[in-house]
Length: 231
Image 1 (cartoon, rainbow, N blue to C red):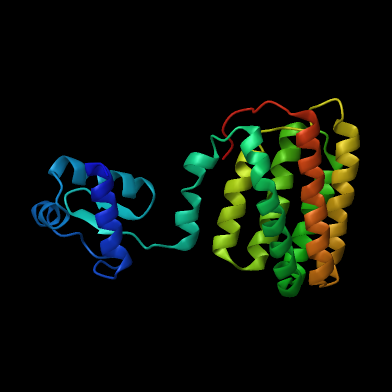
Image 2: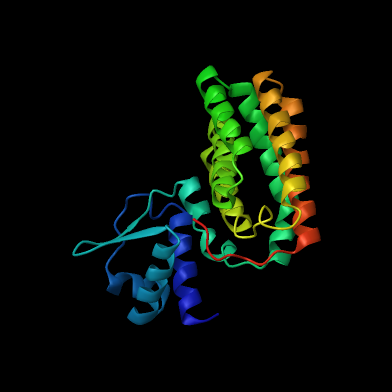
């Protein structure tokens, strides 16, 4: 194990066993170096690495602190790596994404309120009406993420946001099959919305899983190039 790995592992262990809790200030560099058996340079690098992941927070002139350790925020840090994945790797994640989208839709159906339903209907009406590729991508993302928000689980919503951000870099609405894809996509969205409006978790889950499977099919068939990073 490298000195950096030792520093990171040691810091994580102190947090995992409760020695350091969310909001706690880290002990002095000297104390930590002695406890972990690493140099100051390795310790500082380990702190920077964990800060980049949201585990630690460095405050200028004050030191380093354990972050809030919010599940949604920590999952969001996955975007640093998932956002770089090639299409083949993204497609490997689609089985997981289908399950997550289906579960989110199921939860949302049970928790749907009139205001959220009206908002989703407005988004879908705009989505059906547009032919602009950028607007299609944006509205589609907002539609699905609104469902995830209604589901009421911040960790689930954050994980879906990470997966969806990279998927959006591979545009299928700008291909020669765009018209057929959009027709199927609009129908899939409507099926999801009908199930949500009926407060039917089983139907919502099935509709969402089917819709994601359609997207996966077109990505595998068309193999589009990535357009870059998408936030």
